[in-house]
Image 1 (tube, rainbow, N blue to C red):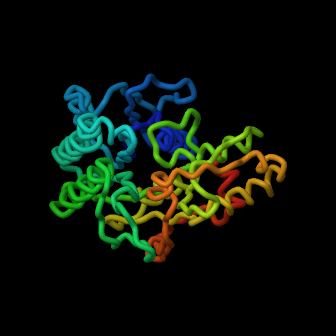
Image 2: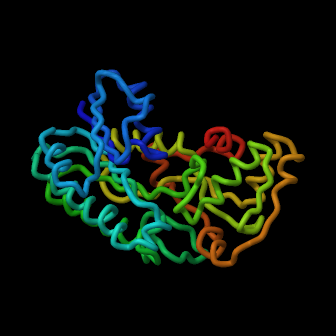
Image 3: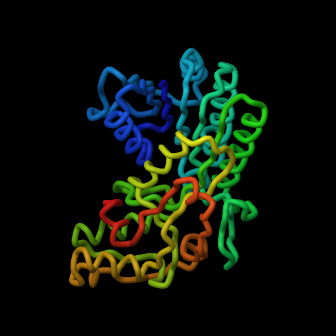
Amino acid sequence: MRILITGAAGFVGGALLGRLLRDSDEAEVTALDLTAQPSWASGPRLRWIRGGLDDRAVLDQLGRTSFDLVFHLASIPGGRAEVEPALGRCVNLDASLDLLQSLAKVRNRPRVVYASSIAVYGALSGEPVTSHTEARPAITYGAHKRMVEIALADHTRRGDMSGISLRLPGIVARPRPVSGFGSAFMSELLHAVSAAEKYVCPVSPAATAWWLSAKTAVDNLITAGTIDTCGTLQLPALRLSIAEVVNGLADLYGPERTARVTFDPDPRIEAVFGRYPALDTRAESALGFVHDGSVAEMIPNAL
């Protein structure tokens, strides 16, 4: 099997690449990223391409390989895309559309797993969210993600590929420094308590978010690559308040560490990233997609 991972040195991409190199003995993996090949990523089954999808030469190089499975993870984070919309369009939209078109030209109908985002939903009501909840993106990043979902669905309809878009929630714990993400506080909270540091949380204890560890996100990406279902799905995640996560951290590390967490809520951050309603992912669970199970499992998985 010939596999392509874009964004292979990123937080989730690197975790996926490591899993595939460890567990997929017969797969040939092409890894694409702007950064140099990390020292831990090596082996006769790995080909590393340093470059971006906005580079025509890179797309031409990829087009000379007939891939069976593609994980498209490369993107500019939402916070950065909002302040640099031209860059966001170049990477998150135009390059993604060019990749899909390049894959379609090969005519071998690869399985394409696209890492979309809950940013497609925009402002949420108090109603439970499913993959059928209306997408009303309120930021450029979410708008571009929705556009690529539509493009992938259209290529699938045309028979060019077998596409599935996964709407990822907040993935934790991103390595420090966590920047470019409005939900950075989710990862920073876990890092600070595990390191016995003081932390001022920018949302209140009652703020709710959807939490999924990178480990479990990789499990779900691999599941998406092996099933036949096409379309757009909402990944399961734990809906937890900050208070519940702090209590889980206290159980793991002791209350003396979580006592160093204080709160200075920013209404703008909490309005966007701290008021998530319930998730209804029963359909996705029936297909084999999972969350971390509990806060007690999520924290060590994340860290």
